[in-house]
Image 1 (spheres, rainbow, N blue to C red):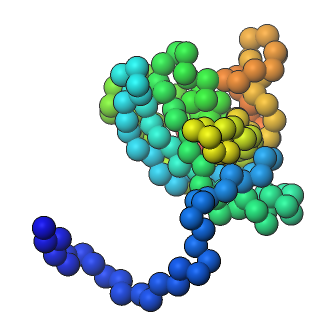
Image 2 (image 1 turned 180 degrees about the vertical axis):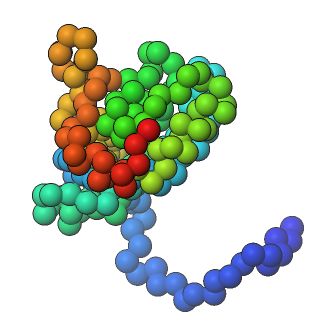
Length: 175
């Protein structure tokens, strides 16, 4: 099979001495500044509309987090159902963007495109997945989200964090 050279630009010398065969390590648990760098539309196992979201950890106030976690990419799956929508609503409220009206491809993509390059706080927790320790986003915002209706702390509520910081994080872009 011939692959051709179309589009191939690099011919850099590679140094494999410091490359680990174990893969990436989970970032330490804690509060980071995260930036949405990529979205990819997919279907969840249930057949529901989903976005796979890549968030790059770009900053942290804690020195240990900056040393070991910054530069790491974590993934989040946004499933567009009422049962799975807690994370989507949490993100939208913290980022100050509108939620989509439906789970249609166009609405999901438009929402995802509005998330690209947004910078906001993310709380990273650890989980074990297929025998490996992974970092996952527990919630978006400076503090755990609270349900707007009853004030009880739970995922999927407002969790806005500090409004003045939100405008700065989004580059002044609102809704």
